[in-house]
Image 1: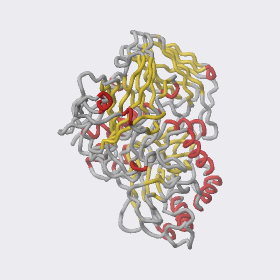
Image 2: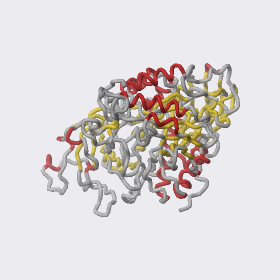
Image 3: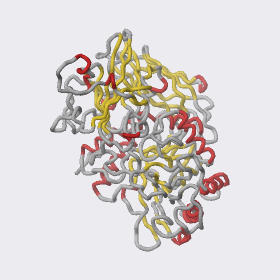
Image 4: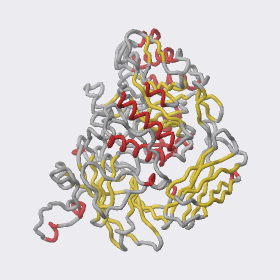
Length: 614
């Protein structure tokens, strides 16, 4: 299967993410879906809170017999039982229990803990339309496929469990009482991203914030403001306006930096700028400085908090603002500390970043999917550099153009949401995928797409440890040629060898900056014993002692990311007592107890015992 070398979208076309998929055709009246940016910095009407829900185990009220989506099901939000009508539908949201949104359904209702399938959400709300205003329904994320009705009109569909989308609802809202119905299907698909197998829990539902966003008829839907590469005193970027008049005036103001740019849109609604800035304080872990950036176009305006920095590679070095830097980090899943379930609140994020600061980390790999936007906002404020990844994890249908289109859509949604976050330095296109020509073409094209969508950041992917015979592991995967930085996942001392054999293992890796993107061993918190006894905290500690020594011998290593910050739920971890459904490689248990290895790595990172920036 051959994929085009270039899939760059027209600026206006880039607004539209494919909104229909294999379950059937989209109704003719269904408007196209737009992806807004900076929604967390706009005034919104929150729809978070209690939503009624109904479980549809057979999916029969959503899908027809041939797998298409029909519009005569629960999306109509009728009440046949209350009015005594004789209808085939047997449901009633008004009498149904409620779930909290945002939130996964698995941890809110014990009967739904292992449920994967279709669940319907419904909420009433009051609305007063405003003149010369458009309204969008914003959904921060819903896992995995979503179908949305407002006032009995199906307005959009979305596939992908970890990125936001916005559906225009202007034409279907009316003054007074309104309602929204959302069907979310968490069923894993062979042609999904991720596919049917994933080593993390498949939390279903409306897992991030839901809101209504008002914008003027002509509005800013996308923008970019960044430090011009190769400079320390110029800012460049663009503002895109939807449905604006020709040559619409646009302003970009950053008072602290002395920036006052007045520009005009071109025929596509895009206005570019390249302007001097005064005495910029560049963002870094030691100086996470953020500027107030104000953008205005016609009747629309917004203000963001943005840091300015340059990230690039030079040979095998990673340069931040022109200086070599080493990434002392860790992996983190979007698993809520203490309560488990999906991260969905400021409290969850504050707990995670408290642990990162305790570890003396300056870097976090947000695996294996885009996390809640709160994570990147906090990283901006705390000075933690971020690796952000789309869920191309192992068993993807790389031979299908439709799956490639999904990957491009997810990549675009991730980059579009977070291009304003200085903390994000790496876009990752995949984790642990098989080395074959079809996969390599797929991911090489995707890496090229990432470079086109955002030329100011580095592109990476994580490779599984080479499995060559003998003690020398040689990475020859051709995908590495398409990347700026190469991630290597290795588990010497856990899945192969013993910890004390690690130093005899040698790695031959590409002459590019290398991040050891995963390495770790499992230990049940509180389980103690001799260091050669697996599953003990002592074994995990000994693993890291030997692994850091081994990895320090790789000259081009520029970062460490142990696997993983906290124990997290996984459907594949089924050893009773020791695992009980959790991946136990965390440095911290799911209930917040720090293991012995945490203290060791905290000291390594504080003293910079291992790792050199050049």
